[in-house]
Image (cartoon, rainbow, N blue to C red; front, side, top):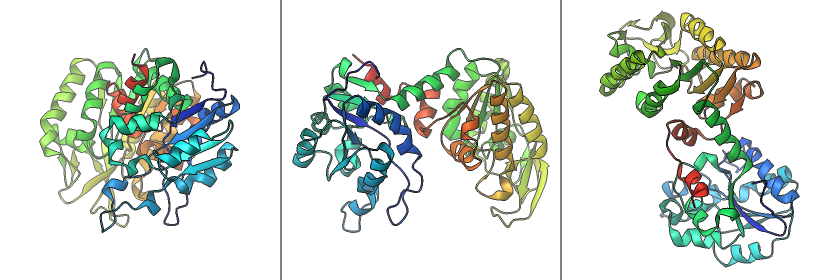
Length: 402
């Protein structure tokens, strides 16, 4: 991107401004907006005029009772003032992302000013990857920059198809997207070893492809969260009422066999914090993970597991973390996730490279104020997952293609 001349150019830029809003339309977390600022400021500082497009929520799936779009709830107009504050630039707003108003405002945009377009998902053609819709978006700018890593796994009009209407020299990744791809590639290509992947979350089915891929290049794979109990049951363990995907037991067995055959250590939690119900107010105890009483459920990794996992993390040179170790939203079951987060931070301070791969792991790291203590925190949950699985993301391929 830094090789492109933006002087007096209209720069169509796809960002991920899908930020959470409260009932009053106020932004409750501006992380994604702040993530796009280096790219926007680079364009502004070099005499360009950014034309910003993004989606916000899923307006097509949450229609009003009469079948119309709830434009009041999903409008990007909520973001105008904060975008001006973050960028230090004058921000104009177009009440649609295509059409006469958008075209006129784009044409009249001065260097150093920003035009924010209305939510791209107000049009069904966006998610369908419609060519004509993408062509209308492309007509607004001279250059296309994709800085929305969080949506790079979707072949939508504004993330992928639009790139076709720009020559190779007039399209590029933004600085955030470049950073995401660079850091993810450090884990996949020639990582410092040992490489430890920490995989958590509720379901094995959500992480099958990732686990299968990790077995090809990781040294250690730590499995925690609800998904661990499918593996433990597959080994013949008693898991009580713990979360389990019975239709994935054979798959879990095959993954463990594959890891063993390749000499990869796949670590499951030795013990668990268990509860008699899924509640903050439940009765709580500790038990071996393969010997959980019939009416109890595992909701966090136990102290022995925390200790074992911490030791493995401390010996690692590259660390990938995707998914919590328990129901960390409930304080009673957050110790495992907190312990992992602290261990990753300490290992990083001793020279390890650590990538927090999106989703709930990011929420946990931010909650504990450890974002600055790890090497990189990804902004893209699903996109990062698919990239690590080895998939070519449509939004990436569109920029890199001929």
